[in-house]
Image (tube, rainbow, N blue to C red; front, side):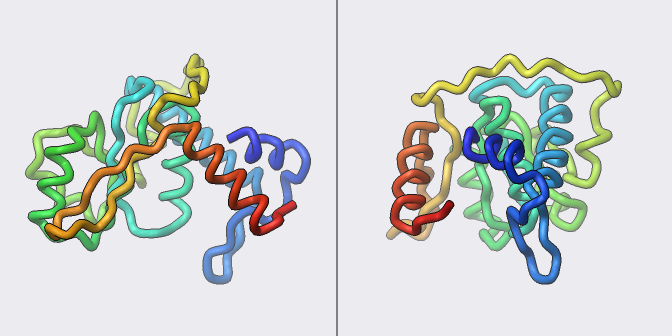
Length: 180
């Protein structure tokens, strides 16, 4: 996240992400990341808690993943295209502390006895509007994200990536693609 923080400081109004005709600046993205970060902290999410993110590809997915990184929670994005059976297996294996979905997909997940919040409700879901201090200090050995890979059995396999994995991978891609 240090690269992202540097961009916010040095290029706050530069384009960070473009989705279709809409673009989002570093500052706009960070504003929403901080909103979701505060919401997760108010939901009492702790470092290394697993947050299952059941959202379509979009800016909200980026915001929530970055918010998880901010507090050291493990982001577990899964595709809404998974079958009901695959989804059940993944949820049982991951055992998330919280599931974040949207109103459209929320009904698919209500049968699980786990806390479930719609992304549209997350900024207002917890009580109070005071700022909650984020005490997380990044450790390169902490798990940052769990991604699912396709397997030969047809059931997605969970792969854990640490912050150290992420930093090295991003640095290598940056060097290869020669981003500024």
